Image (cartoon, rainbow, N blue to C red; front, side):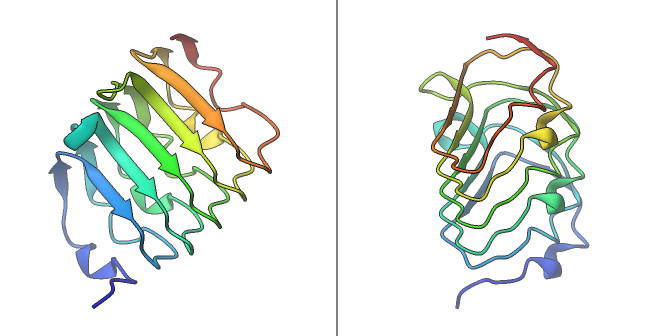
Length: 146
């Protein structure tokens, strides 16, 4: 059966190794607000959200706080408009291939203001590519070096 609602997880609270949401019909990540910390999953990602045709936002991740040990990877989410929900993240590690942020092919993404909590040095590279409606890098101003 295909999962299209994470609300049954709403009572769960805690830390996880890494979060992978890939190839779903989810419109939101509601139900994940109890996640307050993420380590690093396979391939070095902390968050990997990809190929979700209906996903509109990341507000269900608003419980995340502090440092993430791995990559923030957001790719090919056809309706994703915003990264709101990630503003509690203050720093990122990097993946096995050397990236800290990889945001690619999210055709409706309009801004990066959800990343405004990031501060200081990124330990890896930054790739932002092929996001047709993205007109500003506002939200990344807290990053001082790569």
